[in-house]
Length: 584
Ligand code: C2O
Ligand code: CU
Image (cartoon, rainbow, N blue to C red; front, side, top):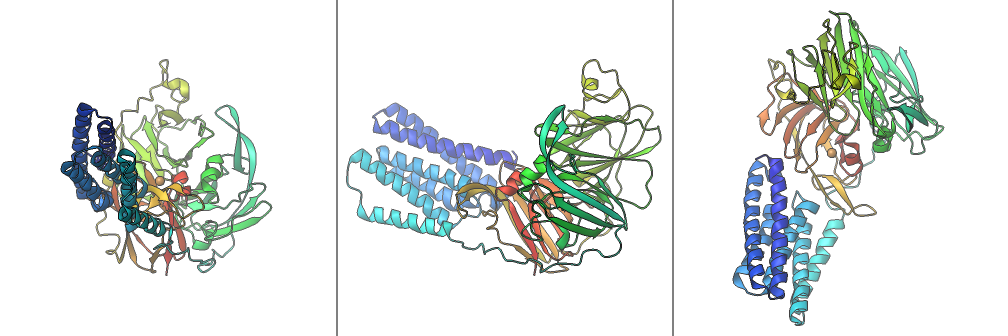
């Protein structure tokens, strides 16, 4: 069973155990013996099952089970012991509270276990048991127990809301103002952000757009150009910036408000300059209020072309605008024998599935980096993480070729294969949408490995455990998306030194996919769940860490500054899953 399923089974067992013991307690209190026995037996089984799932999860990685072993298991054991040693409803209720607390510690707090979580759980169980005892027996509450409970509660709350290990966010405005590119710009663009109405899926849709269009204008440069992009904000009240997603610019040009620049407010402008020295497929988007901003349409494509271009070059930036999938389907005939490059971009917050039918193709590049020794693929889909880019190349055959995104025809080279009609029963085209059953490419096993390791061994290591949890540090408590049990802005910076090789271990113990995205650097994928990457060296800036997965990646600390490091499911980033990498 996968770690992800084990996480679910563990949760279910915990809920059943808690519910079973509480139900048994209630049944006992109302004198229903048979029901009491039945529920208690079920609860005991569920409690034992949770012991089993805890062991399995701990073997998958301590991150998956730390708080279960240190807090949940002792509580549950105390509950079992109470039931074994004493009769009556109260021990059953105690076991119920203990098992419920064990589940809550996992769901609200998670990894790493902390003294505050332990204290709060113990206080909750003790408090609930004392009150139940009073209600059942009418005896006065034992004084020392009450004092101990209240003390544990106060200490737990104090520790939970104290700033603790997470230092205040250091201020480094301008400290890393690495000079933007100099030299006469070869490519000048102006992007004006504003509210507007656009057509999408045959509807008028309210949008936020660059130059009145969604996506914004495609910015195309040729390797060696200096790019100069003037950002203006007409009327986006929240402010806007431009972040060059996947393009490793100097820190001062990275477009992260509050870190590398201030947000550009209505009536203001900001000029970005950088050298187009990294050929490949990228995109740009606002990084101010990025969840709503990108969703509403503040994004566009950035392509840096090699000096010599041959064949047909098509960009396919996939997006969901007010529920309508973009782009609209296009058909563009291509003469047989012509080389075609499809630049697939996922600008949404969740994974999309792309399938190219009608010709063998290669994955030439991922996230703007060419792959080594790509081999021809057929009847294979590719899954592109939020923010990710895949370049597919093929030679146009005589018959049409069609690209499907989540089953929808988006691009094709022939009249018979495009549009929604071609996927219907009356389709006469040679290309069909029957791509749903195709297996997905695993990029970790695709292409040819490098002769030598691309990076020296790590000098510095960080672990990022992704989860959900209660964040009590803001104005209002919230159920945040967390990294190592903390949420933005309470997650300490990762501090590195120029020239170091840095290793991230990224562990997903939540039930959601987290497309991880580090600014300013491409990371080399080392392994997934302990299995080393065996294909081409895989340099990514956006990669999906699925529930239960453990990814190891390394990168060279070669771009000084303070860099955002976050989940690119932007609602998750907004809800806390964001931290910074900083050069000391
Ligand atoms: Cu495309 Cu910080 O993100
Ligand atoms: Cu996420």
